[in-house]
Length: 501
Image 1 (cartoon, rainbow, N blue to C red):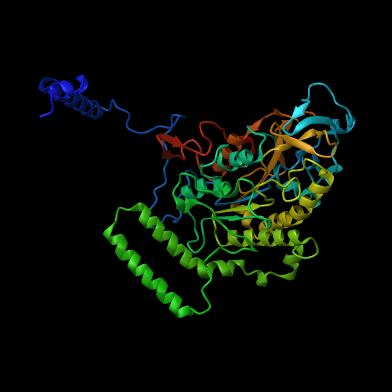
Image 2 (image 1 turned 90 degrees about the vertical axis):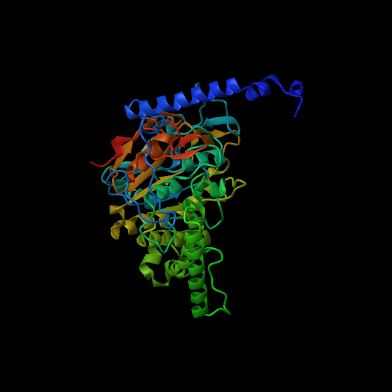
């Protein structure tokens, strides 16, 4: 036996019979007390979130992770389209009219910062495009976006948006995942985790990348984070179909079908051996979906059946090559929604390494040229997509979100031709199911520098989007690393003023 002198004091205590019996007795007493308190209803009977509400976790069958599930409460919106513009669209040159900028053009009034994100600031600059009243509401919109300007009576604007960061990667993460850091589930992943999808032949969540590639935060913008992998976005575009779906030319259709049938039988037998393995069931479900996508994806991507008038309305021909490719992406987005895909995220802008206005909306220099370039790509196809959805009745059950990560400054940079990042104020808009139309919520200050009236944080914005999809942002949670995680962290309030009565 080991010499007791070589054992520590704590070790000797563990070997002490009386100490062991005393500890065991206390433990048994504690268990009995907990049992009696529970029987008398004196213990908490359920987990609560930081808001004091019980979480609502969807009941997900591991064998059918994409099956449609009920929302927390009834709402018109059953699907959502997110049109995301990386790079920070200038609210001051598009939707947020500020007459004071024209009055103070060329001046540098006190109270505004002398140094911003990229260095010294220059003078106040009036909008680079003229504004004029549009529609029945008389909403002031610039000439930069003439096609979207025609639809302002159908939009609900947020003019006092504010974010926590002035850096693009973190800004993209924040508005798309609710956190500036990477590794958190995207908005689309949360929605599909909660609701599944009606169409079992296509992914529940599709991300349509810009023709020029991924945005700066890459796949994090549509990732699943710590949610099960089944709820990450599947990314493809009209130009680039999903990888590894095309059948090899040497393999006949019947042979391919036979292979799939055999795999299904083998997978089913394997699952019978491990009935409680949710990860295995999820992988099998994803493989089976990929098999179904071999026929469903080529069908939905085939634009040959679109009419000439539709192609013309979207601007597939007659503009730049990039505009034509983005227009095809817009048509693809509509077709996916028609097929019942729950979430479609459409990107207008790219470049993980930055682009300075060439591949996205980040216009630090020559904003007149670079914003014009991006608007030529985005404006007509996006407006046509919204109009087409309205004409086909899709907006009756689809929420449409147009967003960017932050705004731009009311003054120029020291170079005198571009606007720097502005996290203090920017504009996003909604349309479609459940939203007030021809409505503007919140105001930025006279310069468009900071949110002044009814400030809307990114947390508030995402809380409102979830509410419009019938989901309580305080109760839609996922337990991860000891915390009840949610899209809005521990913040956010639903902006009820924008909800249609």
